[in-house]
Image 1 (cartoon, helix red, strand yellow):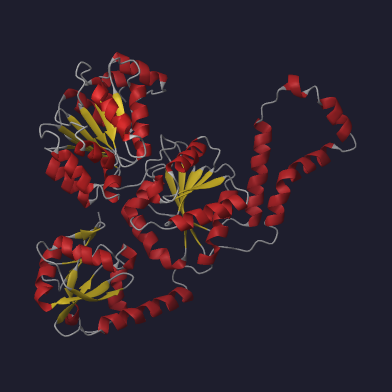
Image 2 (cartoon, rainbow, N blue to C red; image 1 turned 135 degrees about the vertical axis):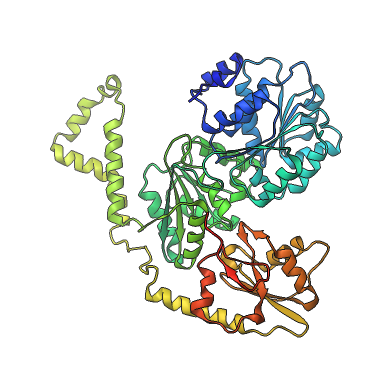
Length: 582
């Protein structure tokens, strides 16, 4: 393993990062820094959040900054205000002993006039969110004609948040003779398109496997009945007395509701979602960073840019719509060589989604039973004993009170004192869990209940399969369904995006769990087949065929579509073939 000095980092920067506790380069830093210092090159770096990406591009940028030039030389784009401020703080720490370097964060939620004033005074490095930078460009306050390096940090998150048009508009303002550095946790198709459009012979650095979760994260799944999810959440929290984590919910309403319940039940919890004001968001984040809040209940959008070390757990109270979102969630724990746990609380109907996530991240979930009351009481009890053993005692101060304490307790023997001391904390858990029921769903995969559920799904599938198209329409089968995150809106968007110059008239849509049917006017059917060829949806190759050409519905045969979402159809859309697993 090389040192930062061997990588070529200057003495002034070395002094600063040594004070910050940097000892040896992390893998992404060891790979990226030499490329940026030795030659001007475009780089695509794929690595999980928390693997040291900011230093990987930040240290070379600072070292190569011309302090005599007060124009913007480097631009770093990131998805959120919080990440913008964090990157700025890190860069300022790295450049602590580099006089003359000026770094400015440009983000919404703060005075634009103050930011414009700072730009006029001259800065060399700008860290910006796309929306606010666009405002600056339109006001002619941000001049990017001298930019030599552009960094797209958390590029996949920016695309998820809908910043693609803003990114295109910003890059159009920057000279083509620049270096573009793209840092991302995952590599969706949109990122690949950006690299082809804006980068020249980029060097690709991959830490781990593409789209793979962090190596130090243990993935655990608890299957319960839907009505028991909150009770299961409490048991998970109680069985991990030192938990410090984020609980992810799908909607703002669910987020606030779960947080309110936890706070009412005595947990150090709070909510983070889009309905909060910026001041409220800042307050919650500050409390969480200082661990005054142990459980943060958040939506994915609100938690973007919240970079907190030492998280022990990520809890997926609601499953994400996209496996890439799960990768981002789980990547918030298990950082810097530490172990972490990513938990999913799911129900029986979501088993197939779990299998999809397992396949995409190339990891298996441990399917555990929800802890029993007895197990929780035992963990809490011994956690308290461990704390008692490790507590620091100020003998000088406490000895003043011991004579009175001894007199107060002289009627109790040693065993009774210990018993009463332990009961102070233990009694509330013992009382709560005394008659607690088993929460884990009793049905295993392949049980009678699962088979009954499968048969009912087959009946629904058969009805959709046998439906005759309306007059003048062609009915088309597509190998995507609800389990893939497909909705009527996303299906229509998919058709219009892949079929250039055409607005496809869509008729009846039958959206099923693992495949679907839709109808288009007959004249447009060939455009659908041509446009969908070699296309993907959230990483899944798309296959379509004319539904009427299938002879009849056979559950044993046609339900095989459910088992492998990576199947696609060849050019004539009649012969099915399996895509080889990577």
